[in-house]
Length: 182
Image (cartoon, rainbow, N blue to C red; front, side, top):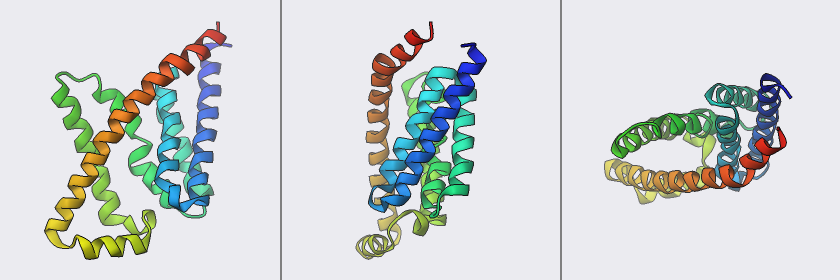
């Protein structure tokens, strides 16, 4: 298969799989964040297999299809604001030196995305009862600071886990995809 045809085919398959996972987030609201995070794995696969251009197409295609097809747009918004573009941000930031710059870029992007989710669309993304219970527990400026600290700690764990998943993908799956294309 020619390289451009391979890239188009892979991008289309990754886009379709991402949309399936976004839709699963609508079917199982308790697993919404996990399903949206899983959908972003296909953007990561596009970065590895075909580069940032392909990943941008997978992200854009799955985001548009998510907005058009999903009955509840919360998963689509979460994907559009953070999980979809993050693999590309991660790929670009991993090239930076020193390591502190990498983390600064990633944390800056995460906090901008989290702020958008938290202050603009949180009712669409998170369960209303859980939000009101948490707001009663952690209200005011101190509560907001606590929310950001916990969210940033969760993001750091997510990023480290994502790095390990990427390594696993490269050693187990990508190698086989490339071997079959020879």
